[in-house]
Image 1 (cartoon, rainbow, N blue to C red):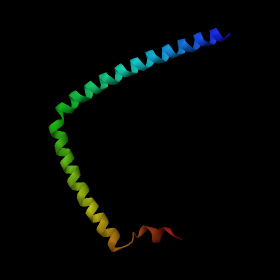
Image 2: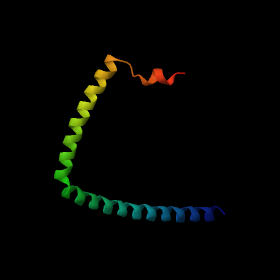
Image 3: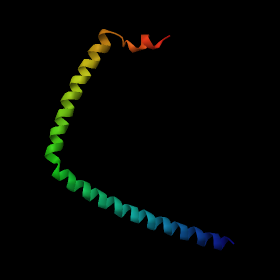
Image 4: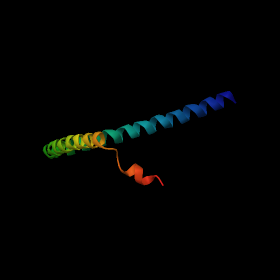
Length: 80
């Protein structure tokens, strides 16, 4: 009985290994496709990042000044 259980365990482990290997191959293919897309959209992506950075910084400054000057009015309205 012990020998039988060991054999079954080994076979299941082999199947897991093959499954992991297939999954790894799929991941590599996806990474290659992503790299190609990034190379094509590299210039456009840089412009988007710059826009996001500028808008994000301005939002941060306005949010900090608002919170410092006055408390958010939604809290008082929510209380019955």
